[in-house]
Length: 381
Ligand SMILES: NC(=O)c1ccc[n+]([C@@H]2O[C@H](COP(=O)([O-])OP(=O)(O)OC[C@H]3O[C@@H](n4cnc5c(N)ncnc54)[C@H](O)[C@@H]3O)[C@@H](O)[C@H]2O)c1
Image (cartoon, rainbow, N blue to C red; front, side, top):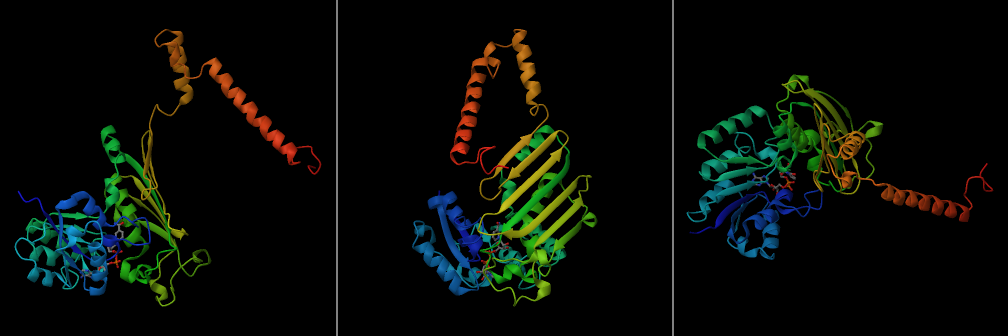
């Protein structure tokens, strides 16, 4: 059986081929495809109207260790061109759609990329980037209906949903979420694409970027009662909105299109819980600061550093009172229900800690004497 897996890449930009900006640096979808599919991967086409950009992307792939997966790849300007060129045997099983949202999520010509692909390549699965569009949601619903009627398999790139742990634990405990709190603090210094800073092009700070955390909020707590959403922002022209480390010129962007620096929102979920979002464009360098809290009766799920080193901690009933656990254990030993070594801190072991604390204290006092900063020394009045 031929296990070759034909893939069509749409968009020769950062999400598919990498960037120096943001946490997805060195983590492009094409690299991941190569890792997941290995020698099965055969990229049949790369669609991008920007021929020069497609060429750069393709040339670098042909010089990479995965070159054999790319050797048949044709650079193509449009879906129509791809439909004319990709014949039987080179038809894609999967299209990775990393084009900007302005050309997707609608049935209007020019903004109907998913429908073009589904019509040209029936049976081809579509993996579409977020956000689903930059236009009205009605258009997206029309796309959804046609894709469903065609039976097209579609997935959207909200990858943070795939982080393991929290949701499974909530489901396993049968918990009803009481509230969510998400924080997304962006490191903006290397965000140099003017289009990203223009909300009429990118969708803006919330629609294009905080979308990941709005999505996670919904993933954990369900649908939001949209009329309940309230929000405040710090705008670019307000004193707290001044950014000192921008590496591009924001002036050509019309003032009314520029991004807010901070957005703070709250809402009610339809089942009664409350959600909170804080999105901030504030940090320098490249490391983002991201955090999600989910509260339920007795529980606090905390997921931090979602892009770089996702870490989940769970506080749950019973596991959070060390005094009680300590005493209950001791009484169990006294009662003979547990062996002596269930006592975590023996007398001899506690002396070791006592000695360490004295050693630290004495060393710090010696150093203070040496530097003439001991309390009561000359100069301390
Ligand atoms: N999941 C994530 O964390 C993540 C990260 C980065 C970007 N994204 C998303 O990926 C999408 C693309 O972002 P990017 O940063 O790669 O943008 P980009 O501007 O770097 O690249 C987009 C590319 O698409 C091409 N393009 C434009 N119209 C096209 C069309 N009709 N058909 C094919 N190609 C077309 C452009 O010429 C450009 O080369 C956006 O929706 C963005 O939100 C997601």
